[in-house]
Length: 159
Image 1 (cartoon, one colour):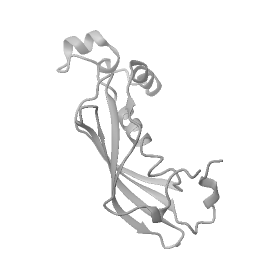
Image 2 (image 1 turned 30 degrees about the vertical axis):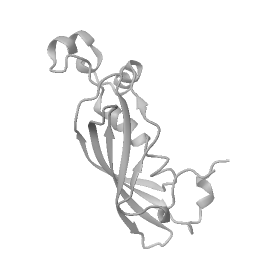
Image 3 (image 1 turned 90 degrees about the horizontal axis):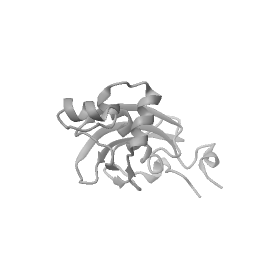
Image 4 (image 1 turned 180 degrees about the horizontal axis):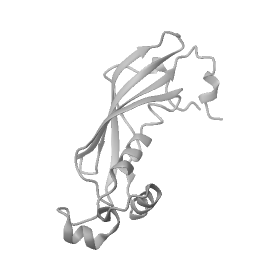
């Protein structure tokens, strides 16, 4: 079974809905804060969040939302990538809370063949929404993806 796409399998302007979604748990938020050494109480102290913040509840860390959002795109965008070249313009469009379920969809913005002829770049914009359809994050990224004639093509397949 193949994992990911080849350069020729992308179309500029194409919208890709990534599946499945992912519900963020309290454990996800707590462990991510610990792993990244983020000690801000808005992410880890329910009493603080309830009494000292406008949302009156803990917020999910933005980098966790990004990690889940980009992770959902791997099978469709960069599963066969030679390299991830660039991530740009991450915007936090709406807060994310524990218990929210995230979904991602990407639009292919640009395709560019490399001068080597066996690969090309794929640039996408990904929108992450919650279970209510509210956009919580937007980001753009570019991956270097092999073409069919790439010498190491067999390395991107699963048994």
